[in-house]
Image (cartoon, rainbow over the protein chains, first blue to last red):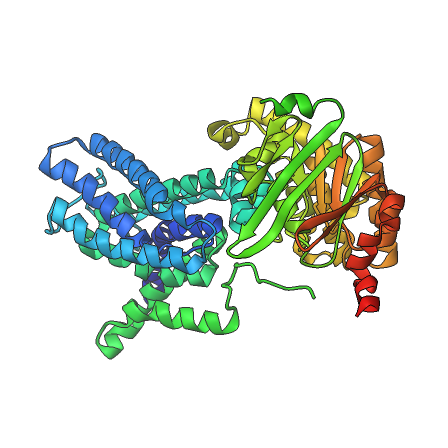
Length: 296
Length: 268
């Protein structure tokens, strides 16, 4: 019976981990192109979910239409955001972009509930609630669907950055804005593309997590929650985000299953951060991040 | 538009009274020069003479506060760097500016970015025209890799290469854009004798075999005098001399700028 418990915790941890990776990849998209950390990524997820849930609940949109509205909203919103707030910062120190995203995060956290209401709303993307029972294994359907969506889109993004010309150009932009311009790369256009992609990923994350935990401002905390995932895997690596997500997911599940009964609960919430600090001590650039080696 | 007539014939790049200020500092003032089609044009001068500022104006990173710059008859004084690259001007940087995380091959492919036409969607899909285009670009890049003898290093991350090789890769990346005007900012700085000789040979080959016009900044006088058709000397932001290497060598203003003014010492 004991190994079955371990098995179940691990599988569920892996599923949750993939769902973390879906949120975390939003950080990677921005970091890879602009070299900045977007502290508003969690708020993007929240606002995307709030829009979709609001459309479905308040205006009676069918789910597919509500998702389409949400997608359009995120694309337009992030496009405008890049134009108005972030583009003027091209060439400035990275820290000013980071500060802008922190301001943006606080603003979204205030504005979201103001416009769409603060109560927790359900989000139903048509995934059944009854648990999947497969032999001794006990799984939540939304976790399985969420992990599936995550695997699919992470594979697409991974391919995009490694193989496609646009993806490689985006990496070039991340490396040096000035050099990229000299290559004839329209840096502004790639910034816009990166932010739009981050918005689309946020929508996917919002749908999956909104279905799992309900939609309210608490969702914004996901941004902070996946931070250990991003740090663990390395800010510029998609494979890293997957591995980081899986490690964090499994650690959380094991902590909840084995440590919580002993100490009375709560270890699940801080184990990821303990792990993050340990990794930072050994590999400051994450497990898969690129170490910066200067040749002198 | 009248300038077009004036810059016809053999003038590739026409700089007219260009000036650039940074706050109260006059980095470049009233510099005029013509770079002829197909020549090697060298810009020399002591540190802080405004050479790199001038190069940055040509490549669009700065715009002249006064005067104008014409490339093949078009006014590019206010054109941005990515559009200037698309017009056929490629450059290297004084401090190596390779995409360090990328392989040599990917760096050169990035150099070809200006020539790539397919849009976001087709490059996502990677078939049809996008794929054919990719193959054609790849062939050209492989030619350049072979020309620069970088074949063994194609898949090496550029950041891991020795300094001289990085400079060579940067030249390759600029060449990948098939520019008609190539700007080199100190291509031989920090190189040993053998690396310098290699670089000189590549620069001459590019100029002679591909007909590329080259404007370069270089401190090594021996190299400059050997390979240049025309030399422009700058000091304190101003052009103090211009001509063939022999003419410049004989110009007393150049000697003053480099060795200090001997006349004044005698008077004092």
